[in-house]
Length: 100
Image: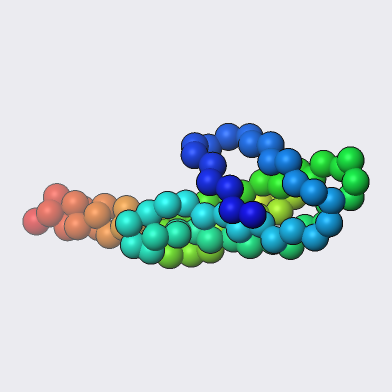
């Protein structure tokens, strides 16, 4: 069963008991399905399964899908390191111009 859900936030999806494959992504230009994450879940009769999706920081990375509160955004550390390097380079250039 394919279910399109628009917007962020909590969503409840009613399914029959049994095994299900859940695939989540963010619509994007290229790739069309950015941050794709897939998870096999087992739903017992009358049970609820709570999952959390975390989109990646970098568009081409995979998303994270699993237990609520345990997901981390893929690529966050890489982006932060690149930001720090960029700030250090800019400060170095500014210091070089200030000395000259």
